[in-house]
Length: 116
Length: 114
Image (cartoon, rainbow over all chains, first blue to last red):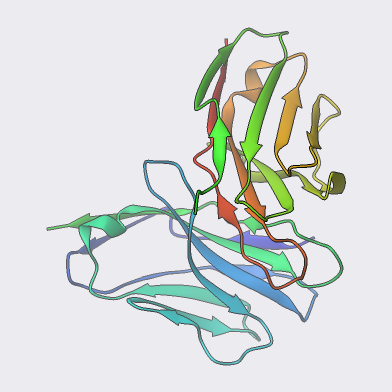
């Protein structure tokens, strides 16, 4: 079974600074998808960024980028120019790309605080 | 377009009762997945429905069940509620027709069992 580990329960960053959230995963599969989701107090899980394992190029979405190291099974999220609205819980998630496996396996989350 | 709608937002039930939660996916999406979120266990996959058929199931007891209607709306039912069922229940919809699809989550139903 796949597992996802987020070793940082809480992180803090000053507004306009850069922060990196860590995520490692364990799988024996070669084809899969990785996601970062943001959950603000409104509770809705919002997709931040997605990475396909077969793509070597790291995904980027505006101020959000990932460092995907497939051999090391590492998938960190970098938030540049942090804003107050970035404060939330961030979850790393894994999904197999084989068959009809549509289940997301989540990490335990990292709570990000953004300070002035 | 409208997002994923979950009703109700909050629910308080007594131990032993049963409860039904509803999820309306994004128009055109045929897959609905359900997740349970608790402080202790985190986010856990319950099940997924695609075109009215359960396609995947997580490791939850049979008290947890679901169904999907022809309009893709899904309901989740929990019978004989236990205190440990108190959680945020999230549903996610997706097109589901290919492997490379994204998920859109609703805002969840907060269930409290007393």
